[in-house]
Image (cartoon, rainbow, N blue to C red; front, side):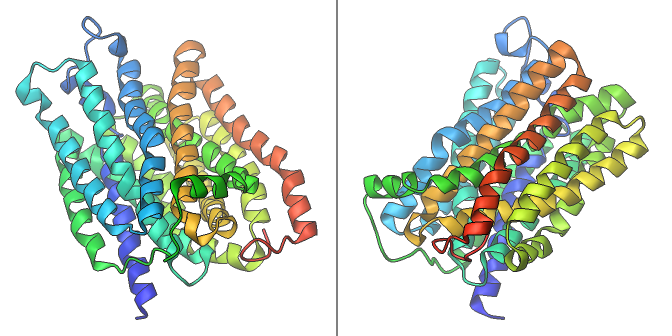
Length: 407
């Protein structure tokens, strides 16, 4: 096996482990926040189970937004990735373990739990974003490399959700302990990969200026934002909706989430390779339009069986969009700016998750689940329609500054 192929597998495994550990918590998040001390009488962040769950998830992604750029900038400036990934993974493991210890301590208010969650998120995003950047550094085609990242993300979510549901049935704290162990393994595994960070180093100001002068990055960032918004929506609102509408528990909820994440994961690599051959326009624009319609279908499905079918369809469409969008970042960014460019993409994605939690949670609690599904599905459709003229100009102009010469 070529060293790049071997490293692609190892790095994809690291991405898988980070996402798997994150998704372990989602199916039982309502039960978990209760165990961690969410109480409407003592915290304004825990007026309802939905509110407490929303703020628990928001705290992590707020930290992602605040710190992912710091990790990317530090990596590009120093010309190193591996030491930062190790540090982020091990510190993230400490954060998960500290959360698991909260019930034993018994005197930490829910605001303190949210502060621990912020620390854990700030550390974990370094390991996640920089591992994806190491995949960008590999040879072999941007679509293939981002397809490997995508299949790892999807598999981590697909397996993390159902296994997390099963672990929650055993003990609500078990997902936290499992996540801590996995991040320790991440810190050890990433040292087995060659650090291929480009040799050319630039100052922080020069790096930021280089990214700023590439406005075309706003296109994959916008799609990354809305795609992650839908994922955040399903993680919080979808989870609670399935349980309330169909009377199911965390275990079955995890299986429903897996109906999305399984095809989303398994098709990432071939869809990424497909975008290398046919360009990015069809996978991103047409895929996003259909993806938005699929979300509307999930909200309209009348039974668990039809929800499962709709979730599978949405997963297939998500697999079409995701690797092409990430590959577009690599197409546009200069080699020496990849850490910052991918950090920007993950900032957009984290803001999307926050939007999914906040917009979806607020609309669902105020106006009901039906309108929440309508709003989120429509956003995916609208962003695709807005982007059509830009992709048409690119396709007609065939801008040579892009790495593949095509979108």
